Figure: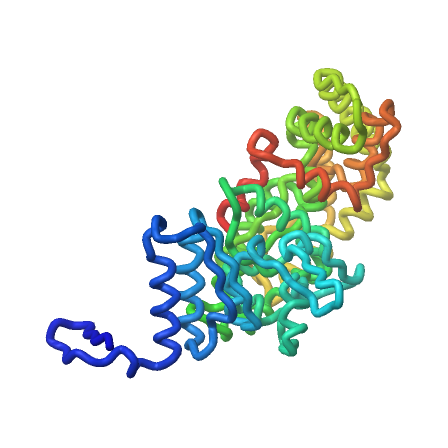
Length: 410
């Protein structure tokens, strides 16, 4: 018989009188804290350790187990949704109920999730198939959002994939934070729906409101510099949401803001695509500079009055959306009337051309065209829809673009 007491003034009690859940935790902790020299192997196996344990204690148990996983290999089997949700994705493996006992690494599945081209809403998590297999399928994505460290609003699913990929690259070691992506379905939908999301998300709370965890990312498109900077400020002050608007026309065209780093990435990508390929990086940089200049100057020169007027019409539509009472109202940074807006945009195009800041007007198709011209001697084609994520997967600290530093806030 073992007697115990917690405080010095307590009366000693028989430890067997404790509940089964508490006794189970004591056994687990004794195994974890046992001196390594007393073990034959630095290996601990837990089979369903979560029985009879309170939900909050289950999370603390996982945190404790993870602290010991550096020097000790730990295997834990569970059917418990709470434990599954609190384990980092890279440490989860799903053993499917099949005759050939197939298992998959969850973190590898995260980037391969596909949804429809017109999808809007919470981007699915790779946890969903696991939790669904346990018979708990209602509201999975929304629970993921509630329990996430950050909720990131993006225009489309490709943005979600790209940002998720880079979030795994922006830390030393493995990023264990949980992110939930909310696909808005385009920048016009952001301006239309953001007030409604704020109203709802401010009312939902799990330690903190969902809105306090929100972060907004979208492309600048044709918005000129001063309007972009003031729009970021206005969204922060009016909607209380941290916002990143790309300094380039699209998220993909950030690659054109540092051609030397892009050449490093392309060299690695080409070498991964083809064995025994000989890449002269100096020649690659020179080719990037030449084709970037040629293709983008041709694009700007092709913008006739009709094209510019059409863009200014879209610009005016953005102005009207921002001016609505439930959006920015009098905080709208775009105040120019149609004629002044047209003059401003033409001046903006001239500044881009004079300063050779062509990335401000380069869409993802331009990025694809420039890269394909550069790599054409190697008989390899670059598809921006398929290969952009492959390129980002090769990013390391030497090829990290400064324009991605906003991710360190997430």
